[in-house]
Amino acid sequence: MKHRGLFLLQLGFTLVVCAFLIVPVILSIMAGLTVNYFVGIESGLTLRWVIEVWNGYRDTIFLSIGLSLACLVVTLILGVPAAYVLAKRQTALTRAMEELLVMPVAVPGLATALALIVTYGSLSGFRTSWGFILVGHVLFTLPFMVRSVLAVLSAIDLKTLEEGAASLGAGFWPRFRDIVLPNCRSGILAGSLMVVTLSMGEFNMTWLLHTPFTKTLPVGLADAYASLRLEVGSAYTLVFFLMIMPLLLALQAFAKPRPAKFVAEETE
Amino acid sequence: MTTQAGKPLAIALENCAKTFPDGTRALEPLDFAIHAGETVVFLGPSGCGKTTTLRIIAGLEEPDAGGRVLFDGEDVTRLPIEQRNVGMVFQSYALFPNMTVAGNIGYGLRIRGTQEAALKARVGEMLDMMQIARLADRRIDQLSGGQRQRVALARALAVRPRALLLDEPLTALDAKLRDTLRLDIDSLLRSLGITAIYVTHDQAEAMALGDRIVVMEHGRVAQIGEPREIYQRPATRFVAEFIGTMNRLTGSAKNGVFSCKAGNLPWAEAPANATEILFRPEDIRVAESHEETGLQGTVAAAFFLGDRTRLFVEVGEARPLVIESTARRAFRHGETVRLAIDPRGLVVL
Image (cartoon, rainbow over all chains, first blue to last red; front, side):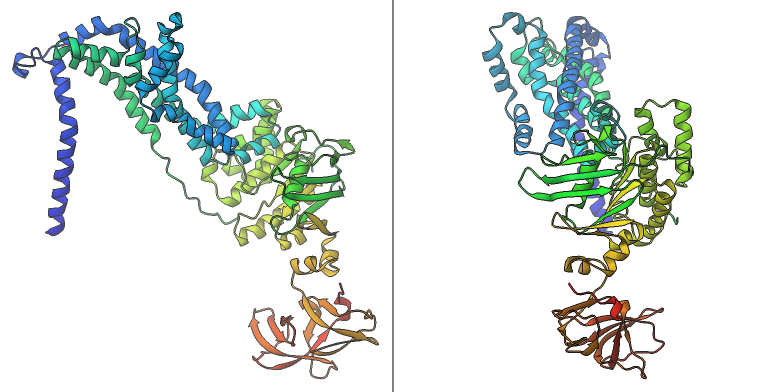
């Protein structure tokens, strides 16, 4: 049958593409768990490399987690109100600001990092603190928070909802708390997961901004690849996977659009 | 009825105009008083300034400098809507998707710090009044349009507002549901005795609900009056054409007779300078064979509607006359009919 042949062809192609993407991941994970990668799986499985990573690079893991959470807090405080203002005031100025906000995403991370170093590099206390990296991460992740909250706010009739709340006696803060925030919850959640994931994995900028005492997980990873056994680097990747996968899965779950409900008019 | 407290509010607008930042004049200076307990309908096509007027009364817009809004004589011009204690119903309902039906209805009371028990009781009372008790725990996206508007009404009334403002509340609904809800709103406003301001572009809604109607055009008031007055004695051509159907005959008046292409119409009070007369379809009929009449025309179209026949009769004017005939007979296309007009229905503008 003609259709069956076409289906098998498509299935085969899909499987090949999947294999192309997934096989390196599996090999990398296996490499981190094998006793000797060059001998192969026959040499046996071990957690030795994972433990070695934990002992040697524990600090980078904690720093990355702390950094991404700090980054989340800052982007929440800056991004949600910014998105609210952008949604409420549609003027040429706010549209221009919306575009400018995306600049750090478009400009290579190295360039942003260089600009930060040129500008603040001489403030030695700041330069050597993890706060310096945080600034870079916030610059990079803020547009993602603003965009995802803004998308939700633009989809609802925010102005009328607020007018409705005001007509019931709610001033600005109760309105913001009871109406605005709950109704952009999905945007805030999606934005938050995005920010944490991006901050955790950011390498370009961080590589220039870090000091030997402020190494993040991806920087440590590069370090391990460059200077240690392949097994250690792979084990490190495994640790990174374990941290980032739940976040990605959650991101997928929240990004799913809610099915629209059709409600028939009841006879009244 | 026990659901409203206090006496109804009197509202006055003094010299209220509105110019938008881009320079558009949405509302020309308006002076208008709304009596306590009255239902006033602002009627007009889109862009006539009716919604702007409502928003100024609500406190969602400020009038241009020099304008004042008075609630029971007290100046509230600078007071934002949240401090005016007016209930508002929006065309798009503006229900909060993050709350249930009961949550929406109780929100205004919650903001006022009402005790939980009193809040529950009041919400229950409103649910019963709007006959939506079974929907109390539903989410907003699980409601139909008609149900949403009932929730919106219940929410606006739950806080015992001083006045109820309705901005095209039925426009988003289909025709049949509109009729039902219009009846409900009418009996609600009558039983509550609350001051109500209703904005619509639908003249049937305006006629049915308004104690008085304010017809607006291009940011100006075209006419203010009771529905019957507006319908029978329109002040301007715009009002005459906007509300209901108007027939028109052009000609001249002389010695108590108005002469036009269709013939001669005896009219004792005909003003000497009348060159045009207007009248409603129900004031003209097809004359019986024994009647004397000086007018006639040719049937251009006839639609049998069951209880009556809508006739379009060609009389040599720009538009054919519209006649609602209850005669128990059929009309043929091209048939000549003799016409009788009740002079009491004649309007000269």
